[in-house]
Length: 509
Image (cartoon, rainbow, N blue to C red):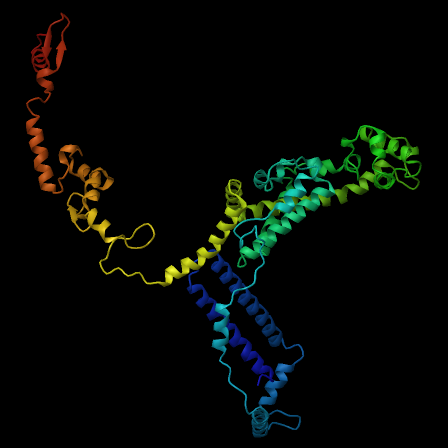
């Protein structure tokens, strides 16, 4: 019965509202494991995408570029070419409905709520490798092999690579302008983006990258991009430095000859030099550019039609600046993704260190335990804890055994007035609380030192009386400054404080 455009519009609005309620209902169910949380996020993401596509379809209907909606509304009002006939339009519509039900007498009414409830129970299929363990860890082994087998990389362990891959500023600038580094950084960013979409489907990565791009463009224009402040200046000499062959690794003509004629030809052509001659001549011509700038080379080495080294360099510089800018922007993306995935990176580091001390059998057994842990946790949560004696909970979230409860005397309650009538269950907790901050604060408020003499004292009145008795007992041995403090006059005579003060007032001293 959704043949009319208005019915399609109504059904689309109903679909959007139903999906919104379904998202709220899904979020009300707290996931018990990381796997369930991931499945819930992907379900919600799928429903959000459906809402977006449905809303876009509604916008197209309301824009009514073909006037189909306007014509249908007019037809419902009975407006025809000959005039307005409301009753004719009503009976035509009634006839259409009866005809529909006559052709489909066994049509069932589908409950949309039941259909959408099934969405909450399905588990989206998200592809993860065995190393990634359902999004808990990163799998950078392929990129690690690419790194250690490149000129800009170094032979390090995989655990050390996890600390280095997010720090591209440690790679020299000269090595970053190579095609090999650009392919590596593109693959690395592509993998991290793919991993982020699978583990955080509700995050809007396009909006995050838009903000990163805006900040990068502003910093690039001001020349404040970290490690790329002098990129434009360096690009002026890029024709001298950047060829298809890195000449820093070659010192003789024989070493260049081993590369083959085609590779030498491509390198010479990229610099505007002659590409003819034997392979020996090509290698000699290319080796000249290692220590001699192109603008100082003899013109006989350049191919016909070349505009010279200075003109050629000026033409390549803007293109090279654009390439360096793209590499710098990829590095900015890499840093942002590393911040977003910092927890996963730390988990991966810990997992690699842990796996180095385990055998293959132990690793497989541990992975099986992790897979079954989610099921056992959900089963434990579903079981209602039976605790009629109201025993305290143990470390595993279950009541402690009754014999342990009796052994520690946890059924005895001790109240301390000094702590603000705080209750302590068990003798052990009661004795321990005299050294804790709450009791010390209460004694400090009373102006009484918290010494061993006041252990087992919980009443404020008893503590004050005991303190008075202690003060009276110590009064005999109390130091009295007026009688025991000594003063000496100019002649060396010794007096106590009271006598010295009296003689000084009389003017005798």
